[in-house]
Amino acid sequence: MKYVICHSGGVSSGECALSIAKKYGSENLILLNHNINGTVESESTKKFKADIASYLGVDITYANHKDWETVTPISVCVDAKAWKIAKGGKIGDVLCTNRLKTEPFQRWMDKNDQNKENVYVYGFDLSEPTRITRRSQIMGSNGFKTAYPMIWDESEIVRISDVGIEKPAIYDKFKHSNCIGCLKAGWQHWYIVFCTRKDIWEEAKTGEDEIGYAIHKDANGPVYLEDKEELFNAMVLAGVEPTENIKQQTFWAQAKKKVKLHQADMDDLEQHDKGVCLECMA
Image 1: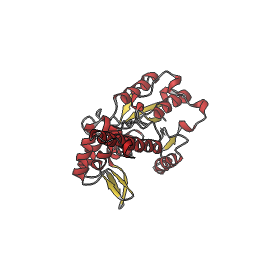
Image 2: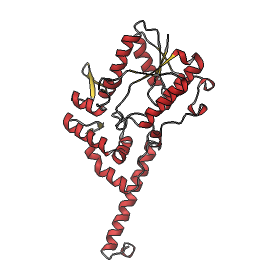
Image 3: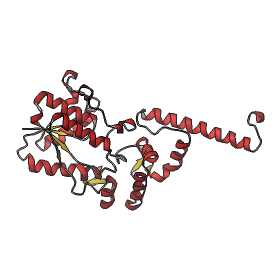
Image 4: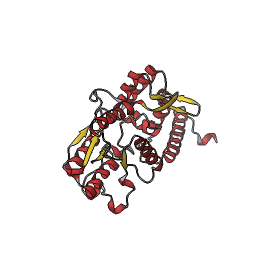
């Protein structure tokens, strides 16, 4: 039996590996990763995965899409002409996760854990009870065991700070170490993409055109990336910082205020350019 760490490159997955190694020994774990194209997976994420492996003295085991070096989450969706998987008439998970991670993971388990002896380790914590329940049910229904070290007693958890490993630099702007341009992410994430990775933004816009449907939707239906460009340009001009390290509600409240103030300043300047002072018009 081995403890198979779902070694995603996030801090929680790294701390899972450290905690399992402390409790059961490095020789009893497998660092299982799905390598993702470097255009969307941060170099700092790849380095973090390697740093954890080096500290533990364990090689990373890969379960990759056959063309992982060239395909992107957007390109696999465009090839399939869909953003999400249809399941029994219902819309399921995002298709890129299935193609780049779930299918390679299933193939690896079929080949390497036919007797279902291993324990599969996930980085979900106490704030994610629904994800823990769902993952336990999915894996359990197929006969696989799971573990969640991030819900252990704090004394049993090894933090990366305890061993001198730095978190990936991607956390400077993003709240997760996921793909840049994550198809599960909301508009705050995509504002960062708009500001810092126009190549991914444009690829996604082209993908929406080719698939014929938007990545995002709200209560009124699909919302295309192009629909947000006017707002995002206004936010850039108003100096709204591209970050996920501010709570969503606070971020959008601050953005709205900054855009409004910037527009008022621009209106004031325009009036002065015409030789009219707004204070004199009161």
